[in-house]
Length: 277
Image (spheres, rainbow, N blue to C red):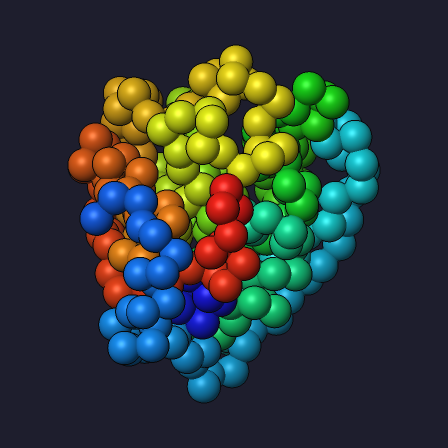
């Protein structure tokens, strides 16, 4: 989905995650997506709400888990101070993105304010650099974004005064897969996960080049067949019907009985290329 059609899913995903925190047709052909787009069958573009954004705090830290400096942004809803003691939802970006993508591409700061203004208990979104194309899992290079999230980012947020005893995670595309993978790990405190058009494949041969280090890495970090590991996590998974990931997303939703569904929506234009993610 384009950033605008992903915005159409964002408010529902954020609201569902907030509640979960307790305060908180198969693979398609590119030609069909283009035809549906022309015919207006891909749904309306999401519009960033015309509401004031809350304060943001950005910074960076030296990550031993990722072996690099990692940037992050804490997004507070309008009306909250930047030192508010509120719960968090981690936001995992898609391929090619970074911690700035949540605001710049999706307008997540304003969606957050709208959700809180509608009556949801306040919480913060926390976007962080997971690597532009490492697919949010430990790589052969030693880069381990999952460990960065749990062993480094969450303690940092706790020191900032945010509540991390119960938290959620939300991601799109590559980050949607990362959010689901995080939810399989039996992480203490992770109670809700949401994924928008997650980058999912059944077979290694169908994956984007570079997404995994090989067939063994793909199998080790698969999210299918792990239903029991999602048992204690509230799940929401959404995808556009014309997205290349629609088929696998539908299969996983059925397997884990997640909320959400397949709605009208088209892929990124560059997703129309074979094996893109």
